[in-house]
Image (cartoon, rainbow, N blue to C red):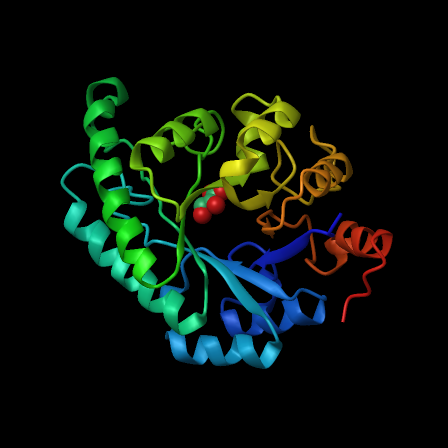
Amino acid sequence: MAPLRFAANLSWLFSEQGPALSARLEAAARAGFRAVEVAWPYTEPAAPLAAAARAAGLQLVLLNTPPGSADLGELGLGAVPGRQDAFREGLELAVAYARELGCPQVHLMAGRVPQGAERAAVAKDMDAVFVENLRHAADVLARENLVGLLEPINTRLTDPRYFLDTPEQAATILRRVDRPNLRLQLDVFHWQIMGGNLTANIRTFLPLVGHVQVAQVPDRGEPDSLGEINFPYLFQLLEELGYVGFVGCEYRPRGDTQEGLSWLRAYWESRGLAPA
Ligand SMILES: O=C(O)C(=O)CO
């Protein structure tokens, strides 16, 4: 069984280093990471960011398509009717950053039920828009040898208006879009909140999974913080099932990020891996 490869999510970890991604990259490398992910790197030019990642010996493995308009309360545009042009523009930006940064995966954010709309009234239209946008995105990504990811985000605790919120919904959409370079982003935090049954769901949906993210439930802290999920068990399950993608550490440190990484140092030690 190959040990899991962890990626530091620089949008959540190492915030004590300040907002500059270059400082967070250096801190992640010092902590022993070899890979990172960033939600939206677009506030910084791509070339210096790529140089900083190379200098730190880090691979960027995931970034998101842009969130859209804060004024409209948007968090992604993939499934939002009337925003197809903006989704395609955002996709082009994400692809340009992925190309410059050598990032192989793009999280194609579905987005929220628009303000003022009722989910039941717009769900069919949003589903059709999402499928059409995903077919376009898959073809654009394929030309760059990139993978697109669909992430269900829980609507019970984190984001009640998000359009895509269960692995079943995501799997159905993936089947309808039917593109080999579109895969599932398994965020354990969201799956636990939306229904748990993690062992069975991971076994069922892992063939579709291109990326995993972890955080404890309910406080979204470190995997070894007090909560519902037994991560040593889940890490072993992912290894036994032969998962070879990355595991994104997308959680809110209780204090200093480095001090909170004892769970990962313990994992590396248990697998005979000495951080650099
Ligand atoms: O909110 C999350 O879990 C995400 O991964 C968004 O990028």
